[in-house]
Image (cartoon, rainbow, N blue to C red):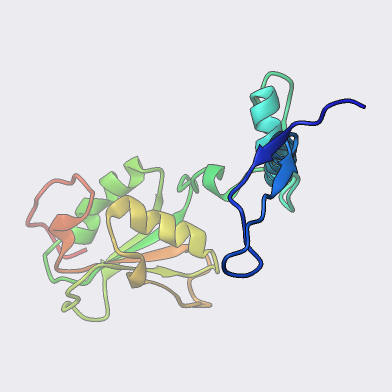
Length: 204
């Protein structure tokens, strides 16, 4: 009969004074160690399996795949380059002011200011159709009025001149059939992004 090897353990007496010799097979320790190692590998595998697919693919192949979204304007071609099938908000071309018909109203009381600003406005591509006085000469701040329901053009003009967009409004006037926007030049006219010549000619 083959000889069995046992590990001696600390005796556990069933009652005080009793002497008990407890023995266990020698393979208990490596057996429990092996089971613990297998459990550790299984837990580690389960944790790795919960990794997001995109991250797992990036770790394996060095590049995360393209995730489909509701915006189909951006695609990926071989080599990692991107193509835009349609313009996204961040790449929309700026609004062109070329040919925009503008009315310049002098609202600060400085003589000839509206007329003197006309060449500088034309240099921006604007079509200055009329220069005259505003309803009163006490406008503290310059403003822009959209006359044709084209707020994007009015806001673009405000950005170009350095006027706050909060001073852009819409007001339809049936008498202004050939005017797209009206510019009211206020007392802050020196802060506008325009280069014009000073003069003391008539207040037009």
